[in-house]
Amino acid sequence: MDNQIEIGKFVSLRKQELGSRNDELIQRLWISSQSIHRWLQYCQYHYFNLVNSTESVDLALDRISQYRRKGENVTVRYVYEANIVAFLNSLHALLDSFPYLLNLFIPVFQNPDSTSIKWSESFVKKYDGYSFYDELSDFMLDPTFNKVKGYVNTTKHKYLIRIANNYKNLEFEEYQFKRPVRDQNGKISFQEELLPRQDAIAFVAECHNSLIPRFFHLCGSVLASKGN
Image (cartoon, rainbow, N blue to C red; front, side, top):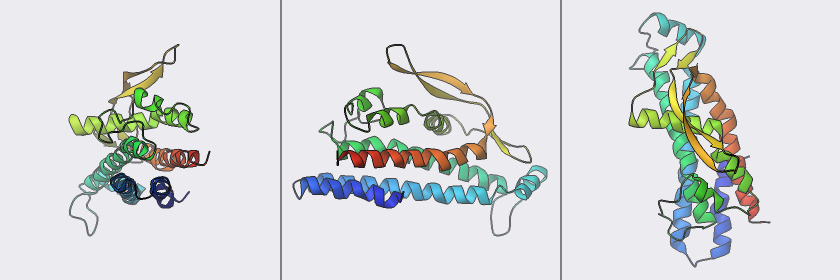
């Protein structure tokens, strides 16, 4: 899927519906879609730089010394740490802004600045009956998405999650995240859970290679619903 073209379709399809009747809404939708596209580019940039700074020789030299690569003004540890933080922050911003765009595209709140427009069971349930509802609900409950939220909320509000260099891989220390669970009646709740130490590069790669494509598949499903 061409992510840039798909994001642009939110604006073009809404324009077809509204014509010139609500220029302010179209402007908001355009800004929102462009923001998502930019966050995606930031993710791509930081992922590329992370991969480029964590080759086996980089990790080995970083483990035994204060290794600084030619042309850089900080040691390689700060390079890969900064790109991990920036990638996950950008990804979180991209995903967290989707409910705002969705409500502009298919309004369920007349006030586009309502604080109720967010990833929550009550907001998602308002799209029950749409063809993309199950996919939207599943994405809200996606374990990787919720681990990203846990990571970003910890680093933003508490402290930087430390990263251990084990020569061949990087490893996050344990951190708390909220795991979504459904009870017997289908009610969703979020339970605090301690996430064990995990491979940091593998986690970022999973986000890049799986979570982002799942998000844009959801975008495609929302767009396709206009034709149903």
